[in-house]
Length: 369
Image (cartoon, rainbow, N blue to C red; front, side, top):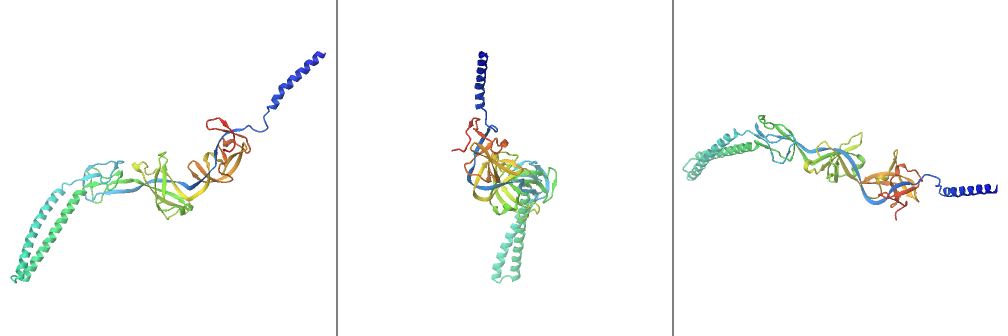
C-alpha cells in the first residue's frame, strides 16, 4: 500500500515538473509581432510641383505651296518621311521657261544697245544745244528717248529676274525641317500657282497644351522651365519652357490652357501622344517628407504607422505634393521619426512590430540612432 502511494506521488511530481516550463513559456496576451520594414521622416527644402496631362501637338503644321504653276515631273518625298530645311519636295516642268528666259535676255541685250545709242545722241544734242545749233525741242526729244529706253531696259531686266525666280521656284523645297504628314502633288499632276504640294509637321520643338486649375496660375509665368514625360517613352524626359498662358478658361472646370514648348530631338514624341507635364507651382519651403510606401489609405484619409517603443502607432496625415519617391505631408510627425514602409497594410494600432532589414534579417524596432 505504501509502495502504491509512493508511485502516485512520484508521478504527480513528474507531471508538475513537465507542465511548469510550458506555463513559463506561455506567450503574453495579444497578437505576435509583425515583421515590417521602416524608413525615416525627412525634413528638407522643396518646391511644390504638380503634374498635368496633355496631348502633344506639332509646333507648326504648314502647307507648302507652289509659287509657280506647272506639271510635276519628279516627286522626291513620301508620307511620313523626315525632311530637312530646303530639301527638295517636287520638281515642276521647266521646258517652257528656258526658251522664254533666253528670249528675254536677247531682248535685253538689244534694248541696252539701243539705250547706248540714245545716250550718245543725247550727249551730242546737249552739246549742240549749248552752242545754239539745235532747237530746244530736239534736245528735249533726245532726253525723252533716253528716259523711255531706260524704262524699257529696266522692265526687261525685271522680266528676266522673274523668269529666273520662276525657274528657281520650279524646284519646290520645304521651308522648315519636319516630317511629311501628307504628300499632295504627284508626278503628272498640274499644280496651280499657290496650290498645295505637301503638309509638313514641325516636331522639334514640340507644343504641348495642358489645362491648369486657376489656383496654380499666379505661380506660373511665361519662360518658366517645365519638363515632361511620355507614357510611350518610359525613362525619357523632355524639357522646355512655358510659351503662353492663354487667358481663356473653361467655365466648368475652372482651368486655363498653358502652352509649353519642349525640346524633342529626333521627333521621338509624336503628335497625339499622351504627355505628362510637371510644373513648379509654389515657392521653396521647408517640408516634412515620407516615402510614398509609408502611406496607408483608408477611404479619403491617409495614415502612416510610426514605430514607438516597439509598437505601431497610427498617425493621420494630409497629402500636399509629391517630390519624386517622397510625399510632402502635414500632420503630427517629426523629422527622424521611424515609420513603417513595408508590412503596414495589415497593421492595427498598438500591434508589436519587429523590424526586418531589407535583406530579410530581423532587427530591433525603434528609432534609428
